Length: 237
Image (cartoon, rainbow, N blue to C red; front, side, top):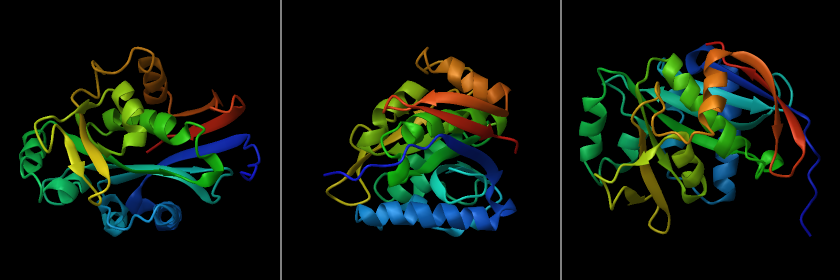
């Protein structure tokens, strides 16, 4: 019988630059590593920890109380032409065209949505695949990124497409790669317009715009279990 999880009434979302809060970064790493270990995944580029020293990395961390244990998170990496994006490190050896795609978009501002995870406590509620995706797209425009790359697992594919990502059919096997190991697949994705959101599902656009325009707010979110959760958002970068 599945263990019952206590209902979480409040979740706190905080965005910050990685180099500005080492302690919070360590909470992110601890939580992300634990989730990957549960699934036996060790060779994944977005789980490397050198990003904590990168001034072009921004983190979104989720906890049940302010400053508490990390329950979920994700990151946005800004491409700087020097440090490869995680997607470049992940699939570049399999298809060098990813390097060209990133470099062509560098001048206009590009980056990557990566390192998405959530813990058992909130798994299945839609916090990770839905809400962290919205926040990352909203933050990307605030960071002056006109395009945004991603490398998603099958579980997050549908919500990524709703958010405005398209499959990068130009690389891999119609955008797919055997990654992080041969028995698993990942799909390379790209939002072509984080500002105008031209490819984003119409129902998602107001949600992203609300986050973009109001950086501190509380939103009542109905989880997939049908119960309300108060999401306290702080996107002041």
